[in-house]
Amino acid sequence: MQTRSEGRTLLEAALKHERMVTATLLVLIPLASWTWIALMARDMYGTMLGSSAWMMTSTWDVPHLLLLWAMWAVMMIAMMLPSAAPLILLYAGALRTRAEPGAGRQLYAIGTGYVLVWALFSVGATLLQRLMSSTLVLTPMMEPATPAAAAVVLAIAGIYQLTPLKLTCLRVCRSPLSYLMQHWRSGAAGAFRLGVDHGLYCLGCCWALMLLLFAGGVMNLVVIVALTMWVLFEKFAPFGEQTARASGVALLALAVWMVVR
Image (cartoon, rainbow, N blue to C red):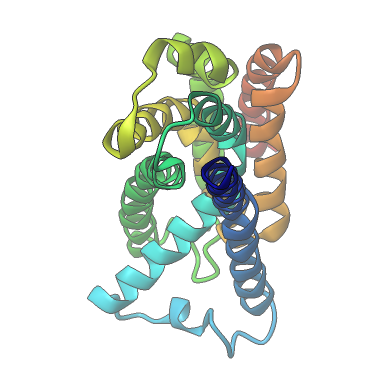
């Protein structure tokens, strides 16, 4: 009886640990990221004496570029990690059903793999922002310098929304159970690979939408929240695929309007 009791206690502890890891990935980390972004945005459009002051520098050395990358990486975690909730929750449920050891490590691994993809995207976004700033396409406030600059970004995003690659990646993101059943991997290394692979599909689905930050203001909190809701709607709403097509047409129309107005 003592052995059964000890086994039951260990199982309960493991389940609690798994739930804590899931809550950390899907609640605590996004919440901390959103808090940091909100404080940055408030300072950027406020006193500019706090955490955003470094963004107004004219000398972009390695430390400043690392800070800019960190801003993008945290923003991507805040915006995109919640959209991976169905995959992470399904993976956690499967681990619970299989009673696999090290469930917490595997959950952290799948989350790390997913975040790594967007951290690498943030490197590209950082370099693009510096290029756009150095050529005066972006203002020091990280907003488009001219309507034409914003129109180009809107057109790129709009065209991509209508491509077969966008719709293929979106279908995978909208079917996490099917994806998990076809690509299941056990162990921390397998979970990490699963997170990377799914993150790549998510990147293929949403990279162009993230570029819209350059059109609306990189640190504009309204734009950040709107894009986050847009991504969630595309992935979770029953008619998300139709929304992607409709938004592509709308973005192209808005780009034309900004040029001819």
